[in-house]
Length: 153
Image (cartoon, rainbow, N blue to C red; front, side):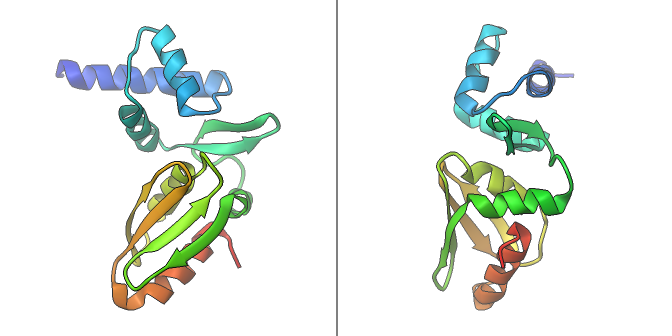
């Protein structure tokens, strides 16, 4: 096994351990805890790690925290996702989903994991998600599918 792959696996293991043993609210906090453990990681790498591990931010009694996968049933999870959405706007080519600050990445991961035929993929910032539709000719169908995925009526 290459040194790089071994380092990634160790980092992933440490991240999973940290997420399951303590409440980590955001990437900055996770980055600090990893640094205390001797692991220096960029925000981009950390974001990729969280995505690869299926870690999303979910509501907890103390605010939001990272968890592995969806906790609870999917309907409850969708309900909370719908609460994160401020607006969904689109033009002839793209869909833009506006979320509350810090929520876009978790919502985008959930959309990507649905593997729908209408969506090629997403790109998420802090509070905005860009959704690339499979076909610009079916943009309205894509919007409806996004609303269904997110539990928005």
